[in-house]
Length: 308
Image (tube, rainbow, N blue to C red):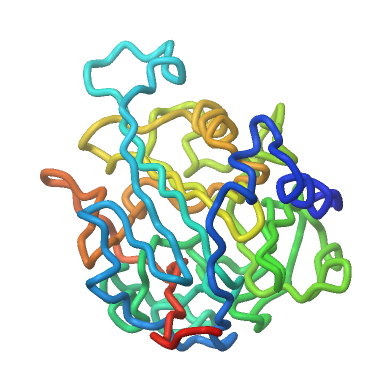
């Protein structure tokens, strides 16, 4: 387990750190208005805070989406005509509780629904598919502070997000290696999928992979990254069968170059889904995302009240 995240984040607060994103001192402060740690949703986004079709900013959350098709340096061996495109979503929140998760029915059951349907229940500013939780007999499922499963067998990697919104990654942890807190901080959400794409600012030499990750194929992918305190990026490639995606190692390098201190791979392929303004952003032409068991989303907590 890596324990130096707090030092790196402190560095970001004090002075700019090359390769780790912008200095927090250069960014406007957001209000910290906590949401309950449960499966209720956020405050519905207000129309007045949308900035065109690709951004949202209210006093508690900032979301900016950019599309990158300048990926030739990451696809040097690719010889096809339809190269990947990647949406890079820059997200800042005022309180860690605004990074939230939800199940289609329950994290104890394997029911599935479309991301759009689940999102309609909780009013996200932006939402993504999750890690196909509850579809495995082993693993770690902690969601919104509640532990649903802790049956680790050293098979896959784990991402744990603590009460401060900080990331902790574990490479193939075994039984009892991850509990419900880290260094005295309660784990609010834990994902069991992976692999770890960026660990302490570095791309691992080897990845923990399994058959459906298509490690060396050009495949649709989704990553959740931390780039600073309460500052995240989500990277998602174009939908499967529309253009090609990316190989895992190239996708990891892109996450690192986008400033990730930690990055973790979530479910990809036909599951890879991003919803903004109730629109499926990465849905192009004939591609259709599958139903999934869970989502991860970022919510507003702005209540419209002026803080003295």
